[in-house]
Length: 158
Image (cartoon, rainbow, N blue to C red):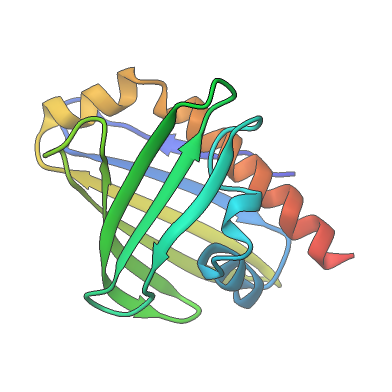
């Protein structure tokens, strides 16, 4: 299993995460855009994720609800701007618990020697928003989700 790598430069409004998966990019794209598969990897372990909406087209809305072990719900949503299977997704991301702090996320999938390099660039409205996301524990949470995605992809490969 590869590790997630993060670029978080002081004073910048972005976070870039990269991860390599030992499967073709068609499988990574399918797994990250199939509403029946997303609950198997999106969100922390021990939490339940429900895909409430997923209109996978430019202008379409997505919304996921994550329920923690105590039953509290956390909603996340956004709108798709660009979808280029199997190489690129561009969408907004907003946590309903902190409304008004929208980021633009660009996920690029590159096939390299039969593996897939995923690059996820998140651009925030301000450095303060970016720093708030970093301080919230985003890196640990995102790494856990990418670990879960890697496990799901490895099981599909068998």
